[in-house]
Image (cartoon, rainbow, N blue to C red):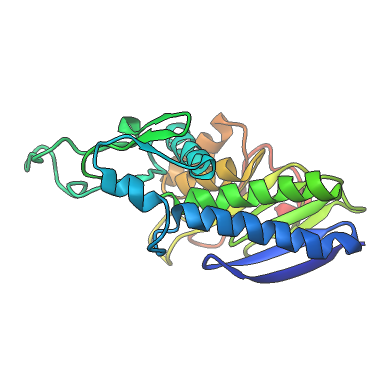
Length: 262
């Protein structure tokens, strides 16, 4: 029997479901702990967040905590996988047209950020914002922690990103889609959805299922802005994707095979 609870954390709706009723209380504590540790590392709204030290270093190497190092590693990996579409780096000169208005300093890119074990070097003028990938990383880490420590099946949702781990419940994890319908999410998999403002993009909502939450979220965010090439881009990585266009029509990739998701 599945037991669940939900609350508001780090600006998102958080939900936890476990396959063992007795484990729910401890599962919530574990998830809250992962969220707090991660927010303390990189929540830009917090004056004491560790990431401010990195952003203020301006070209000086900084030794960071293992948690922030892991979060930065996830963000940089997502940037590389999406060719910079998901970019953790913002620069003061980022809005300049380099051809017509040459910047005073080279515009910092994610490729300029160096991470060696737990030492990070961000280029001069860069400001790191890894909130989106951190939220996805938290769902993965929290789900894995609960499954490992409590030896049960678990689903963790933070915002529009979901991760599962541990034992599969009877009937599988039945997860609601953003618009309508339900899809069965395999244990050990993750799903994330991204939605554009009305009329701004070819796609209204894109949902991606992947092996981990960081990749699912990064892929959904990237595909949302790729226009007509979104489906082929998702197919290139053999990702299960469900795309709703601006007219409400549903399109899926070849690996999105569950008929209930169509």
